[in-house]
Structures are given as structure tokens and as C-alpha cells.
Image (cartoon, rainbow, N blue to C red):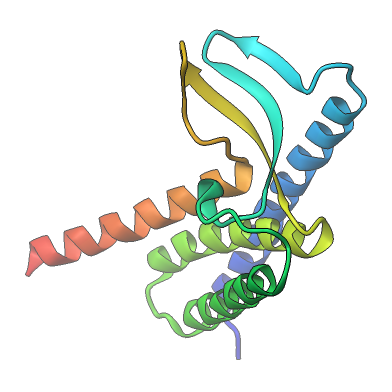
Length: 159
């Protein structure tokens, strides 16, 4: 039987997934219908649409083909493992961070299958230095991983 807390986590995952989807739909709608491929915000932030065929932050960029599909299947499998881990985990605090990761990961996974690529659009930069272009889902995944690592560091410190 799934506890009420676990049901709330699934609702939370779905909510994060929706935030990511809405952000990407808005960007795609505004940038694709704009004469420019960029939306300027200020001297360190632009929204600039790029299509990511790789994994997080554009690492391992590959053409769509058998390797792309294998990576997509592996990511899908990892998501199932995370969902299973979240269901059996007794630590609710860790499950919250896993939920944050899943909300972002499912958003990007949806794009991999729907668009055959992930739309990234947040362009942070300082003068000529640009960080990797990323999206809201990447932010969720990063926050979740940092949270889990922090929890583990506190566990090690207690021992």
C-alpha cells in the first residue's frame, strides 16, 4: 500500500513536470514566433533556444540514431529505478529530493521522445563567458542531486 506521503510526492513530481513543460512551451512559442532566436533580459541572462541531443548540459552531444535511442532507454530505466527507490525508501526527506530529480528528468525525457531533442534556453553569461545553456528541468535535477549529496555528507559527518 502506498502511503499518503508517497502520493503527495507523485503529485509533487507531476507539478514539477508541468512547470518544466509550461516553461518550454512558452519559450518555444515566443522564440519560434520571434524574428530573433534570443530574448534579452539583462547583461547576464538571455533566453536563447538550443536543441540538446546529449545528456545534462549538452554533454555527449550525438546525432539521432541508435546511440541516441540507447541513451534514452537508459535514462528511462534510471527513472524507473528512482521511482522504485522512492517508493521503498523510508526516508521521506531523501524522497523529496528524488522527487525533484524525477520531476526534471521526466520533463527532459518527455522532450527526448517527443522532439527527439531537449530544448534548452537559459543562457547565463558574463561578458564573453557563457555557461552551458540549460532549462528548468536541469535546475530541478541539479537541486535534487545537491540535496541528496548534502544529506549523505551529513550522514558521513555523524558517523
